[in-house]
Image (cartoon, rainbow over all chains, first blue to last red; front, side):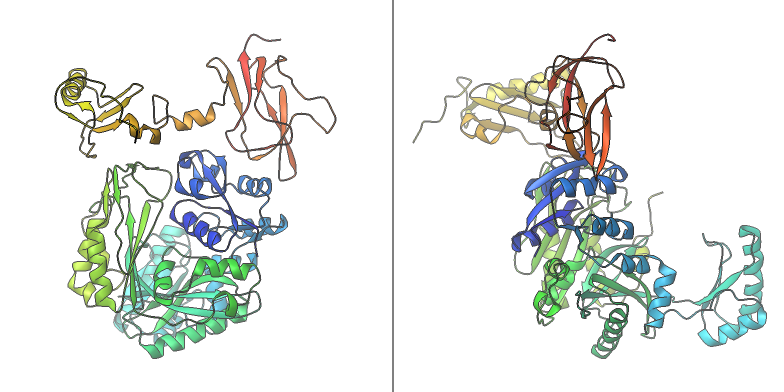
Length: 449
Length: 175
């Protein structure tokens, strides 16, 4: 087991890792930027080392500084949290070269999953369904018709060399196909200098469903069920829950098995999340994998009672899954609301000093936060200030508990998205479980300029 | 049980030993001079008044001496960052050389050799003051001012963090 672990992160996830280390009797080292001098992770760690000025690039993302701190403090493990260096294969390699265990997957797997095209190819080869599409560039009209017949409608024609919405066409009927193909090619040539386009099935009202996995260093992989993360704004998750109302037991079993098989095949170890899009007909398509612990991991922890961060540390120390995790039984339903320091209507960031801070409690309520009264939320990092998680015997109870918890969560001095979450939870479609990734856009049509 | 300390101000209604009439006078003083925040301390009482603004609910905070142990003894409660970066014995006219990296501090170019600089010695801009080893690389730290080494804050071989004061230099003309 590790003797001493350095947490290469800040905020609530740093506190999360510190508490897992404490439970395992492992000494802890925090690193911090000058902006985080009064942060809780600095206060609660056994040792703390200042590694740079406020900017992330000069502190939390500064590999030489982090490694130097690890050497000076003589640690034998580094936990990267999420974000920052957690999916930096180079950093994982530098840790290995410095004889410090990186608590996460191997550099090779981080690299594989980090290159999104490669991840899709590898996972498809390993048996996971991916979004049907042309195999590369569609050279002519005949090929376009063939691909359309294979993947079905509606579909998207996209410029191979571009982005930003140009050289993209949606095709809903057979009649539109060839004109759209021709226009897309022309537009692509004009915008990007190349007429090359590819085609992909369009999922109009997708639901984002992800599976939590854990692997050990002995070739064993398990999954801990799925999370539904369809409530997003500009591709940032706002609210997550488990289990998903869109999955029946048979689908969960089937996809879960495929996920475990695919990851065993590539030799995955430590924590990770496999992300899918689900279309109207119920089919799931692999889109990408995050080779790290995720922000929303508490949702799965509340339902399975498995401590994912402790499991990460234990498998990194060489333990087998059966010891690091043991058996578990999913129970009930959990929801997480990400509370950000933002205006709840315009989403403009609201850094500053918190003047009052009262966290809710009671049965089934968990709050992961590094904020406190009199704390200053710095402008240099992301705006997440707390994760509020509610668990209940069923979804209705989880929602009811979340309502009460949101009402009892007092934050003054800065603006937060607590009012937005109250709105979401009151929406009939949310309560009925009828939503997709466009739900939040429809709910908040007036955006910040 | 020890008696609570005497109120600072006499007469008038009071809460926890503080004369509210006096507090009102302080508030009027703040209003007159357009102050947002006002802090006042004696050996027996510490008052901090903050104006309510759009963002904060800023209540009046009155902390009698019996509870003042929770606050630092210095007049300002918000300068802990400054306090940490000014080591004991630092005087205002010293220019601090702070470590730009995390690592191990070495006073001399090699074990057994003479140190780069000593207390009382004079240095020029660009002169190497010490080495900080990080990830097996030796980084030479240069002075950015000319003057006299007044203080050496770290011991040879000890770990240093970003921003940690290494030397205090009294700036003077060139050598």
